[in-house]
Length: 199
Image (tube, rainbow, N blue to C red; front, side, top):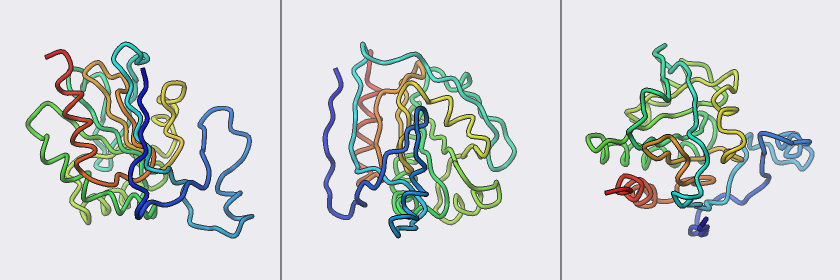
C-alpha cells in the first residue's frame, strides 16, 4: 500500500512540470523558456510517498564516481539504509534544503545510514565546492552521463530536482520526497521508520 501525503505548502515552489525519465516527449526546461520562466530546474511539490515493504520493487543497482574521484557502488551499501538526494548547485530548492540534509546525515552517522548525493548537472569541482559551502558531510556522485538517474528509472523515477529517496537495507525504494525537503524532521522520520523495519 502506498501512502501519499502533502507537505506544508508554505515556502514551497509550485509544481511547474513533472519530468519523467522515460516516455518523456517534452523538454520541461524548454517549456519554461516558452512560458518566460527561466529558473533552470524542475521542482516537485513537496509530496512524500511511502511504499510498504510488500509493495517495493527490486533493489536499485547503481555506481559512479564522486567529486573526489572515489568510486561509490550500491553493492557496498547493502545492509544499510541509504538516502539518495538528486541535486545540482544552481538549483535554489537544492540549496535551501542542504542544511537539513546535512543535519539528518549527522544525526544518523553512526546508526547504519549512508547518504549519497547525485549531482545531475555539475562537474566535480562545482559539486565539491557546494558540499564544502553547505557542510554536507557526504559524497555526491557526479552523474554527468545520467547513468545513476537511469538506474532509478522504472521503479520510482525522480521526476524533479531536488528529489530525495530512502532505500531500505536491501536497496529498495522505501520512500520519496518529491521536491524540496521542508523540514529535517520529515526525513528523520522516514529514515528512522526504515531503520526499524524487521526489528
